[in-house]
Length: 181
Image (tube, rainbow, N blue to C red; front, side, top):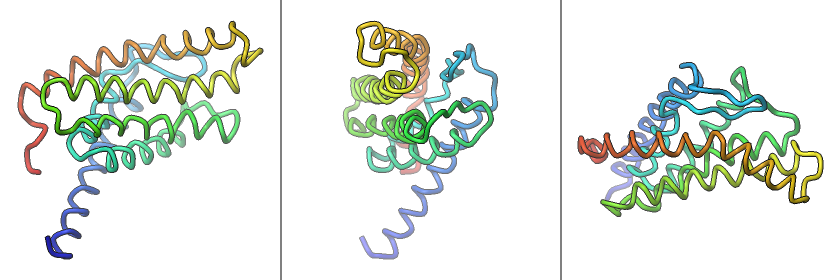
């Protein structure tokens, strides 16, 4: 591939990333959530699907990039809940960058999207869990603190995972994932 072709491909991928980030902003930040947790986190109408779809389409490197950028934008929008810079980094750019891990399974046709989505949302869960443990519970490394952070973050991320998997497999049935590559 020539340098000019590589450059054109990068522009195409960055353009796609922008579109998928915008779709996530609409689905996750503009449309009302199904439910919203009191200290951040919500169950949305497939708000994670565009970012995971992009990662499955373009791979982990580009998926992590798109998730990180979305996390930065999401942190600046009304409704974000930041009490400390490290907590903000864990809950927003790093947590959404973790969704790009789904791209590791871009070439696994049948189970790849499910495994990739599970690992991606688990990565997001771990970032939010750690943030909750460090910044939102009274006794961070006690059994109660660990359980409280896990339950709080699981309360919205498990339903978000189920919705994401269902919508992804409906979309995969349309064979749109690899259109215009």
